[in-house]
Length: 459
Ligand code: F6P
Image 1 (cartoon, rainbow, N blue to C red):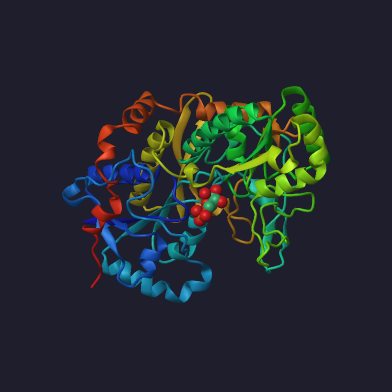
Image 2: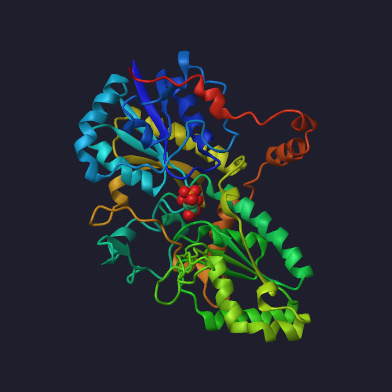
């Protein structure tokens, strides 16, 4: 009997259950047992290894619903790294006791880095997920062209690739898109459109902060909401040009909508969203996000006089407002694109384990001729010469610096992913579910309660 374990690590995405579902359905076909480890790597670090049988008698448990966001297994940001090699034999022993022959890790760049030490003792494969869309490469050799500098903490910080090609072909992209990204963009676009009309009515400048860490794919995708300006972390902020563009737009349409990626940096490379030195009245350091910091800078530049003369007695502070789309980007049901491809990737990852692959990942590729198709990649292809896997950045050729918008190539990329990404069933689900009368008389039924009944522990 073959038995694999599956775990979900890192920040969740709406498509995790769909990936697990794809893995379980494939395991059922191949008569493979699948046990789900609770709370990612934290689960295997726990000597009792909390786990659930996902397909007793090769039948998928009913709690596993590919349409549900989150993960029925729970996720954590606990990772294993090379400094923990000493505990590996212990972990191996636990997994041997569980009679597990390999592990499927569902995650992003943190997870694949965490998988590395484990893969020296145990076959491991990764099924990708991340709303940030930052797991992969713009082209195969990209990682060998990176230059790194020592950071203050003694680690190495990624620097922009000075030898980067000015343009890439879309078909060169390794792991074209990750499950979770399309749904995050879907949520962001709706947010941008809703903020737009209120900014328009009140003649305000709206700054909308979206997730993605150091990668600007989510802000880029927000262009479907037609924001006036998009700021991505890959391009250091040029405040003079931004101020000029904002005032042109404000004079023209009397409001401006700006989308800012949470990791956006100033000309010195400092992240705007990092803790500021300003202090609140109680003397505590204030941690402000990128949008808040951008607002502060714009308030200083425009001043109260600018808005006072145009908005009758209103200050810059009330004319400029910020909103974070926040964790709504990561929650709720996955739209069809994510659901469909996540299921496929889950199944593919099981096939990789069956083929005896180790330290590899299932990938989703795209070509003009074939559309989307599955493939695989040795995880080492993602590593730099120091063994580290970096977040994929938006390629410079995807962004138009002058217009603060996606370039033609960037738009072509977005079209290839997002055209038709929402299914009719997604719309119908929203319609039927939102004001379903039954919701007023029943409590939310948490999958955590249902799954708790199935959790087993090692003796
Ligand atoms: O990596 C996914 C992500 O949602 C990022 O976009 C974001 O910066 C981060 O996770 C937030 O993590 P947490 O939920 O742990 O605050």
